[in-house]
Length: 509
Image 1 (cartoon, rainbow, N blue to C red):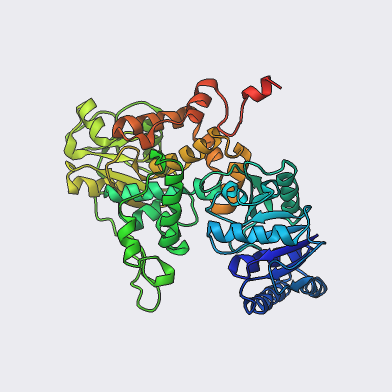
Image 2 (image 1 turned 90 degrees about the horizontal axis):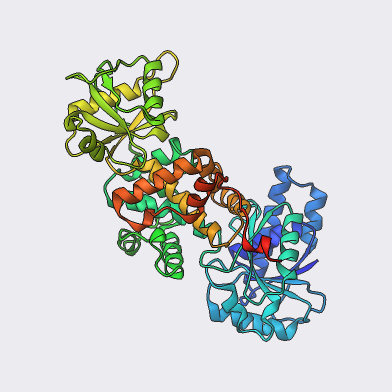
């Protein structure tokens, strides 16, 4: 296949490398002609690095470089061009003007693809004489390593084009997901669940940046915490995506941005690229905050009210670790309440527990390297330190654990983060933006989550997850946490969260 790539910047270079290594001939061009030789040199050096890392042979590398053709003008004639991939500036008029020029220069059979990450494919195509020939082909940086591509048909795209583009992508070893032309497409939309909820937790002073990141890593198993991730990608970029997706979905509560971002962006606190973000970087960077040491009484007795699965699991875990777990509440015992979508404060009020001695434990953290202890405004600090020591000590059958102490909130940190991730993915599924399989595939490949969000929710169980969603919504009154139709239906019907289920199209041909 002969592919013309317009744009010799970071994305254009990556797409060119991907295409020539896969065996395709690439015409690389840019409105800035001087940028093209530099880009070709960069691509050649990256291919040579692949040889050094033994990913390809020297013969394969030489053949790939020979397939890289420098082109003087994006609008040069080309009767043999099968596909154009545009990777220029994110500007609607610039992209539309380019494709208009390409319409005049290339045959009708040439397929057009835009690598836009934020603009409507349909709106770009609307400026063409034949909008049916254009689709989105959204790669992620770095293209050779991020092995996921979103194929985005516009409203008028010919039905055969998304199928052909997906097949092309898969032939190269990358995964392809077909996604509706909606704000953020799939991966950028799905990623809003984690970062918007992290900001909500920070707004409410539930925990500081470092502890939210620690819980995300140690309890949920993410490779990076949300604030570490935003520092890596750049808060300026993240804030733009958050706002555009929220606005595109007509101010959906579930996607609501934080008031914290505009001032941080205005101050240039972008993250790694400016030396300061949520953390400091470079020569002047301060050391990351260490884990505080525990100085409480690990032998203090504890009492765990209730007989539900969360209470039983907490009671059993502490028994195994040698804690003194009382069957009846004594005057000295620390009361540990496993909170599932609820607050410690509500449990104190409902069950008449001693407010100064009652603290919360997130059940999601129970069997992870980090346990999460929640304190209320009424908590006795000395009692809280003893509870911290009890949760941290481990025992003969378990290693000692770290403990994060957070402010009491409905569901605690990990539950709220997970619930938001699953809820945003579920809303994508119920809008038919992408299939459940493609949602999980794209998110694991594009965002590096340990498991796809719908499969993650399935591990919790639809019924248990619905209980958490409903309790969060009831406790906060915030429509951000309202239970999704996707989870509610599957909990009621006994279906997996990963199953598309029956739709009217299965019944009416």
